[in-house]
Image (cartoon, rainbow, N blue to C red; front, side, top):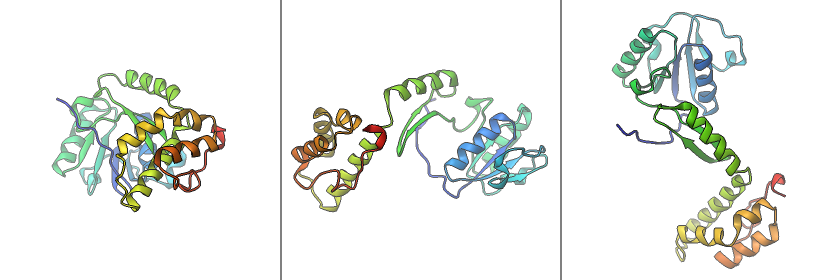
Length: 221
């Protein structure tokens, strides 16, 4: 069955991780980075810096540990316990991830590459996480850090267009024209004046890096 890819805002939403081994700790780290509230259930004390950012219930799992959870990760080394956690999560209306049995869960996690607000995700539907990681490494080489600045430029252009209710050129068309004009290469080389000329020639005199409040990162110069 095909899955349905989506990006979800977890800020201040409760996510529960049952199992504090290597996989469970990795899930905690990713959830914290996304701004989630994290509850970890595991009898073993935490020996990492997670202790002051995670609600750690240092005891065996109890079904009530899943109260109010949006997402649940059943990451213990006991498949029977994981199945029990999954059943309780679904009973409570939460979505569950089973790292040891991807097909048995409600969702899987892709390999993720980030460039600022630009996010690329590679998923194999749980079939081969190793392949997803390998493809992510290939994308990492293809998508250097200057793509962060490119996204900032295009986002600022869109906001400026929306603020002025200017629909004289379609968003897809203007992106195509900027790319054909060498935006990627000019940003990578840190050519501020050349980027400004391209913006003005393509979009109008009111468009420049300064007008868009975008600075090219030092790494692109």
